[in-house]
Amino acid sequence: MDGATVAFDFRQKEAGPDLKTRTCSLIITHQCNLNCRYCYESFKSKKSMPLELAKEIVKREFVSADDYERVVIDFMGGEPLTQFQLMREIAEWIWSNPWPKPFVLFTTTNGTLLTSESKAWFRQNASRFSVGLSLDGTPDMQQVNRGCSFREIDLDFFRTNWPEQGVKMTVSCETLPSLAEGIIYLQNRGFKVSANLGYGVPWNDSQLAVFSKQLRILGDYYLQHPDIPPVSLLDLKIGIVLNENHSVKKYCGTGTHMHTYDVDGTLYPCHMFTPLVISRTQADFARELDFSKDEDLVDPKCWGCCGRPLCPTCYGFNYKLNGDPAIRDPVLCRMFKVQLLENCRFQASLLRRKAGKFARGDCQTAKAILKIHQSLTG
Amino acid sequence: MTDVLDRLDVDFLEKEIAEFEQLAGEVPGDDEVPDAYNCSGGSCWGQCENQVAKNP
Image (cartoon, rainbow over all chains, first blue to last red; front, side, top):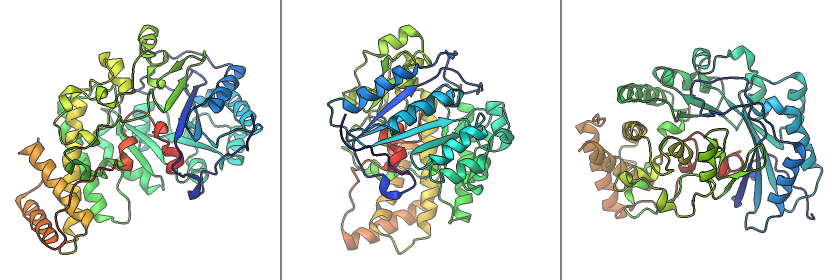
């Protein structure tokens, strides 16, 4: 392979030009030290990926004749830090070789297995290896969801080394009543927060009002604290609903931009379609699924819904639960409509502060609010 | 579905839209996919759409 080895410095803004990016996820282990109540990985084991196999896959991804301009190597599990030495060997091998495309290394962790050795290594390489932390809100929420204490996680380590990365907060039925408290707690500790309702969790309609109430508390908090940026749950770019002819676009890169390799080197559309998450039979069928036509991945019941262009979905979960990547959980659909309406309320409150001073974007947001409100409550 | 906007909100928004569009013309919808579209909604971290590098 020729060409320069290029690893971006994550912490520099200029590190992120909009290059067409292939994400290559390596499931380096099926093992995890926790048993989170919302975990979707039904087939955990002690299997791990051999080092030489990982190298072969990485080589193949870099030299493949495609039009991708950058490669993200994403180390996944299980809990990837159960295989820290393997991850370290792969990363150092990548850095020691020249590659024809720029690349990014990334992993996610529950943060409980860091040692002084692994922390020193990550700290030394923080500019070229990004680490995302899963953290579920307040200490009580973390305990309820994951059965582990904050004391086991060095929050400062993550905040200091990857201040822009943020934490991923997953919400379960049990922690939903504390949603606002959890987000505010993490934001007050200097974290950017990406929160979402867990998929595969037994949501039911009795939680719609709870979700609504929590989003309202959160919205009122942001109205009182305009210096704190709203989390994505209340920051939907709703102006998009005004365009009746909005193109159908697949929600994520599964089966197209993503290549996920299981511990044995088998390629899957994303980690949700691997034998770590679904049965071997289901996973084998998943390898033949066609993700090339975006419109085929729209749930038939969603055509005509004004929220469709904004509504999140997980094709892997849909497949796991329904045998079809397009078919969504109807309760999550109703939860999203609640979220959409609470966005309308919150964003209308923000617009009230701009009375007589509307700009074009404000006008667009206002029209979208009215359209959504009419559509969902009219 | 709960009605989350009261009449005052609706009246206010309609009035502001009318005033703005009277001066600037009709404001159409936006066909661009917003950044939030491909991240933080599902189970993943948005690696597939390069959230990490795009939003370092």
